[in-house]
Length: 99
Image 1 (tube, rainbow, N blue to C red):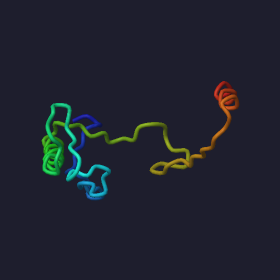
Image 2: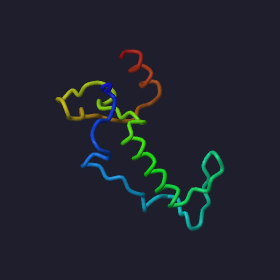
Image 3: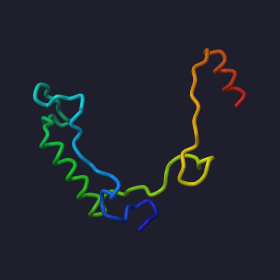
Image 4: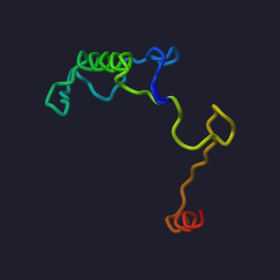
């Protein structure tokens, strides 16, 4: 087993996978189809979730164990603080060139 394969039961105890009842899609008034033309219903979504769980449990889906991206600046297991702001395009380009 490689380091990117998920070894524990799925989902982990601290994660609950459920249907999103607050979805922007109202399946009672909208018809949404998948790429193969199948109507997406609540049963379709439940079946898809079950298929994903089964595939993970059977080892057909590899779950990454590490976090993508750069290491935290504040310590292992913690997100580094981020600051976001808006600037004029010219200033952004100058900052990008300097970085």
